Image (tube, rainbow, N blue to C red; front, side, top):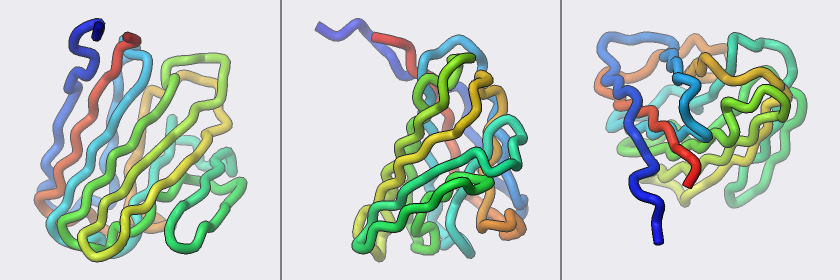
Length: 158
């Protein structure tokens, strides 16, 4: 039997204007996090994330599409195919509050004009995640389209 409601909405942001990044600050009261991003206007490039202002090459990810691409030791985690309209991202950050272990990330991307893709990643930081920075494009200089919806959920252990 289920332990009850485990997903709790923490914050919802509807992007207005043209910001180059969106920052999320999760409280330390959950086991895992889920970020859901939906946009009706195509992103100029792929969505990516950084944790705790870490700009060093402490991220490792693998994209799964028609052609699998592996990337190691980068300065962010990339989530592919944001350039399609009406796309959604479902991003899970596991053990984000653990101050000993590396953090695992799993994402499913459902673009309207491509096949579904996924990303598996690790952040090689052992600090608890207190800040998540979402950006568009490797340089982080592209802007989020007006109306992009970003919801952060906390997940309690079942």
